[in-house]
Amino acid sequence: MISTLASLTFRAMLNRRRTLLLGLLGGVIVVVAVVYRLSASADAEALDFTGRLLANFGVAVLLPLVAVIVGTAALGSELDDGTIVYLLAKPIPRPVIVFVKLAVAWLVSALLVSLPILLAGVIGSGGDPGLGIGYGLAALLGALEYTAVFLALSLVTSRALVIGLAYVVVWEGVVAGLFAGTRIVSIRQHALAVADALTGESGAASELDLRTGLLVGGIVTIAAIVLAVRRLSTVELRGETG
Amino acid sequence: MSTLSLTGVSRWYGNVVAVNDVTFEVGPGITGLLGPNGAGKTTLLHMMAGFLAPSAGEVRLDATHTWRHPEVYRQIGFVPEREAVYSFLTGRQFVLASARLSGVADAEAAAGRAIDMVELRDAADRAIGGYSKGMRQRAKVAAALVHDPPTLILDEPFNGMDPRQRLSMMGLLRAMAADGRTILFSSHILEEVERLSDRVLVVVAGRLAASGDFRRIRRLMTDRPHRFTLRSSDDRRLARELLAAPEVEAIELRDGMLSVRTGDYGALTRSVAPAAQRAGVSLLELRPADESLESVFSYLVRR
Image (cartoon, rainbow over all chains, first blue to last red; front, side):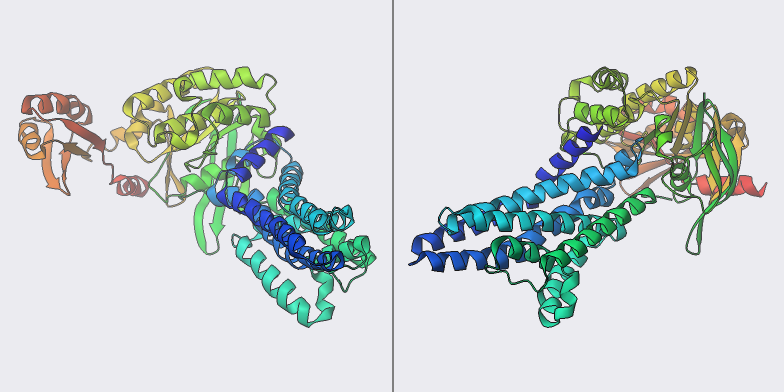
């Protein structure tokens, strides 16, 4: 039952053109790292650039963009097109549906974000895996929090993608930059706090310490999962006609 | 054997009442849920299938509430009206996935049986995205009955099916009903219901307007003429030929098709094909246009 649900979700995601485009976006970070590595005059310069590349593009752009598209589509696309009825008309406990959908969305996000970040980190730092692993793990945890939040959001509103993008651009991009106090509820800052701790603050410079990042990130993730389960248990299907 | 029961069920959306204080039971056999578009059929079906919470009243399958009890789906097969399916799957994969998600022990064998029952074997290994509307409909039905549920709820199951497929699906539903299953289907086409149902429920404007043996209800409406729309390779020539038939009361040529009024439904359906043959025209479409359904049932309610 679980493997069927996971495979359906996975195939639906891979079948979407935008997922493949996101794969190309992941390739960009690797290409940039390769080009800079080849043209950099000193190792320290390349290391510094790679740190900033992974923080400012990998975690700040690639991660939320992939997570918002994958997270909102995991259940949201089936709610939009009505195919959710084929899942809801089955004797599957609703929490199982949410957990499986979240696990697949997390896995896909990790493949599309953490893997390119790891590769770009290793290449940009001249073969030293430390930077890539640090940011890759930070992106992995960030992807779980982001996908959980966006999956829950898709069960709350049909405009989850727009609201999710607005959150990433306006809240994390602008508001969290202007007002330091708001960073505690920025998923990007939670991920950067992990990256800072694992890589020694090379390029990330999160305002949050590791403990706060993990604690708030964990609370947000659990709250999002609980909300998603509650919403899916009471989601109503009206059909097209009266 | 299972029984769906609604007790004092209402459902409203804000200020709009979609279903208003409906009470009935659906037991083994075939029951048709009939009513004009927007009457509340889909709302009722979705409440019965546990996809909508009643605003008031109770919906039960035997002793279990259908709302928020996913385990009832071991007992229910549901065919939605919406055409959306997982278009990237083949018909067989779709039915097989349905079997596995329903926890069927030998899912492959069950999927094969269900595909055979709806006569989809030849197309089973093609992607559903390329299916015709009728084939999709059959795939949906196969997915709904793959776990052999005692209760089957179908929302407009004949939409998009050609006449042969309709007959075959009707035969399948009759056979399943004969096995003691409870089958409820909705339709806005009177004649579809007439040919299939032992019992009908008529919903008008959210209320249960009539229930019981359809033939008896239909007999009450003998003063109401039947209307058909027809399309052919030469509508004018066909109209001339049809006018000679005594059961034809009026013919109108409108919007590129013929609208035929008759007092005798059966006689007209029998005379159309020979008339087309005599006129030497090809018959492209013949459809009962039961547009007066709402007024007919409103009339029944007033009585």
